[in-house]
Image 1 (cartoon, rainbow, N blue to C red):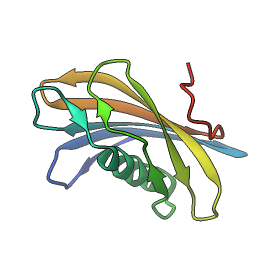
Image 2: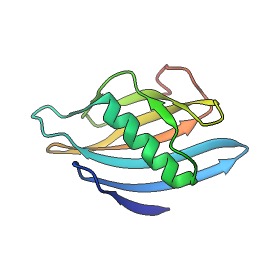
Image 3: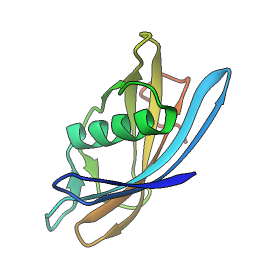
Image 4: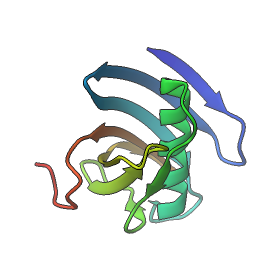
Length: 121
């Protein structure tokens, strides 16, 4: 596990854990400041954060990640994104809001071998 600070316009502090055993299974956390009264994180910002953190955790090139919508800053909110690796393997990514502090939305995400968009709960 390691902690990284991303040098971007928004403060992002992350703890990253990676586990690989035959299939790619990764878990990560991220925090994104959004500057709104009703916090939401843009879908492209969530996707970029996930891709950047996964690349750092695995030492692999940044994968292509897409998310279907903005992430609502409400604890427990989940969203399924799609990750396409450099080998064209498609994986699902579950993003879960863990806390919200003002305009700061903290979320965990985990890549798995389920590509469906259904809520994993």
